[in-house]
Length: 417
Length: 121
Image (cartoon, rainbow over all chains, first blue to last red; front, side, top):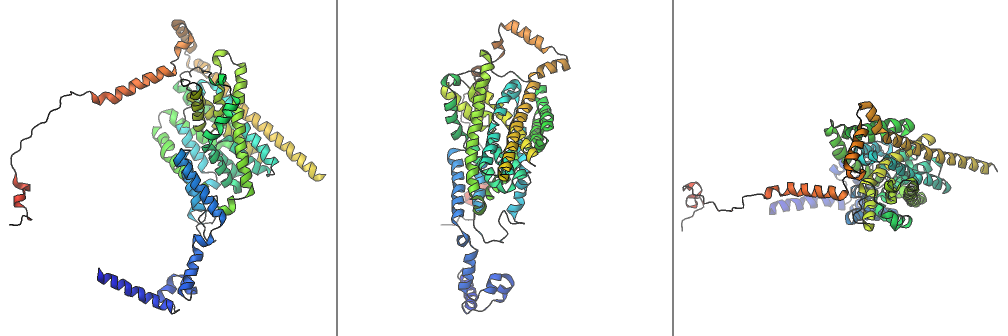
């Protein structure tokens, strides 16, 4: 051991002598460009320092790193969409480690690993794959048993079109406004898909805004519910859903696929994959495929999507006045969408018989944040009446909200492309 | 003046997109709703089964419509009973606990007496 240490110390001294004397090492000239240029140890150290993140850091980087850490904190401490916020939060950290330009590591630098992974976002590949997984895990039974609840999903899309007008009023160009408006659909993959088509330069801001507000559904929605739904209305008990036959379950994705994609062909990648995933699930003969789509595949795509979207928020690109406007519009659109669903449910009650009345709280689930908004409805429902379980009923507008926001995105794309 | 005209045109387009877009979303889901409202009837016609007749018969047998459905509480109770039943199955044991004595013949294969580290004192 002593001999080994002695050898290492001697080699170290031999290496340092020429450096201190200002001479070049033979091996060094073959390997390190830095040492070719450096005349001394201090020069080498200076160049190394310039290459580190510390030397290239800006205030923006630290702000974004704080945002990334906050996302990770929210996910771990409050369990707010941890499957999304942990990859996005970590992605924000990755994207905001400073490095000198041209190092070939940044997400916007052609040929870097992150740039290759980001390809799935910019070309709109990941969102349809996420929809395939969602389709394979969604049970449309509650929707089939009570089809009129689909209208709540449509009503909540007022958030999309309200945000569109708001974005134009705030000075965004019409394509940018179209992309931003999809945040109102409360659907991250759809928002990414639409912005990849309409305003690729805003993907980072739009995706972060959409996912942030989706994670904050348990914070945003309850106050609006309390404001718009009276105590008496919150106590309404809904008729239990009827049993749905297997034939109906198989027919729903097929009919849904044909009908919605004929109306809005631009949404084929999203709606096609959503209903395809559901056919895999309901057909009963492709369990292996359905299982892969709803577990391993959606997990892999979520990881890639989350990390790359997070990494796309480089301070130099993300910290702009437009991002702040997008965040403000996102908050307003969520409020409008929730209020739209709640008010429409109240209006529907005016036309329904006493025994068929719906609890207006489930209107809030018309925003397509699946299944978080349905969970929020359940929690708010049991606060008023601990034996009134609204989860199953709320899932109907929730999944119709997914269909509605994809149709809305398709319409936006077809109008603006 | 020209600028004002351009702005006005843009806003007209925006209102059209908003109006048409929202209407189309509603129409798409309205059509789906209509189809699936009528789906049991369509299936009746296609399969030739008189499901409605059966439902009417069930209603007549049960007295009222509510009896066709199980309330959430009943479903939860059934679920709980099944869970308990399947979870508790392993507990159905004889209840007799004994210590079985095992007698084996002596074997020197691992005896310390013959170990290599057994230094003489």
